Length: 166
Image (tube, rainbow, N blue to C red):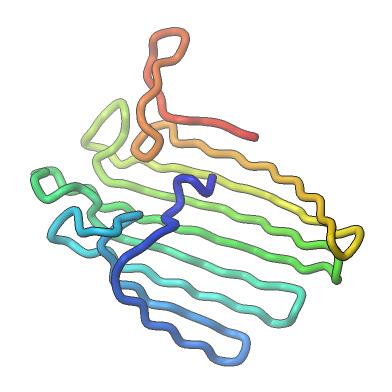
């Protein structure tokens, strides 16, 4: 799931924290772009709320055209990410994450239509003693239109994007 999330960014970030709330505004080269791949910029926001030491909720997004400059077919991508963190005492941490990504003109069966990607994850970490932790994670990823994962040929010869769980 996290492989298809934007994990590195290049641009300008403006941050503001106020008591239990935190926020960021981003002006970026693009979705996982360290160098500029087109004349457009992407914008993004992060909004978070941490009411106490046991709970944290964060929303992230990035919006922008991700096609290279030489392309005459712009495709705006909108990435949304929700993360819920629960710190249940000193010994247990849990994380629940959900992603929804939409991109214009990217449907595998009709390139004039938009396509969507969904993914989610749940992880838990237990620390039975101070210097030892055990973690478990479940994730699901569905990019049926292959705009981020790439196109795969199924056993029946049909084309699809990556749909996986682990």
